[in-house]
Image (cartoon, rainbow, N blue to C red; front, side):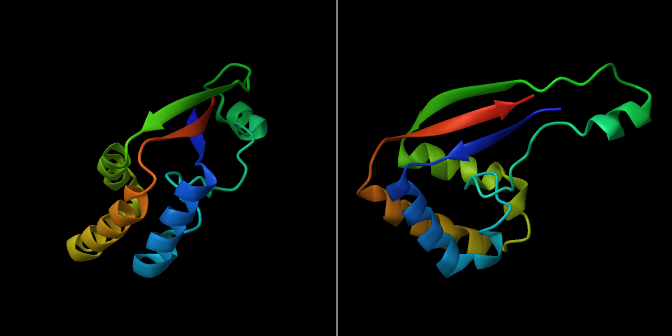
Length: 116
């Protein structure tokens, strides 16, 4: 099992939060793309052992940076399943608001931690 958690720079996070608050406030929490998931500490060793299908679990963490243009982030966001409940019109409004908010910021670097 593996997952990523992100930490956007404060100005980027502020722009994202404003857009989500205005267009999809129900998606502000537990959102991988925003980095608002609860702290995930790794596989549940008891559940893994109970399955009887896996070896001893290990917890590895890898921190890395990714540079985004606003366009790249906007292209990536709809691929996150949390957006599935949005109608096409609401998703378009959200992405337009994000685009507007990120326009003045330009290219930015996000810290990503992969936990495996």
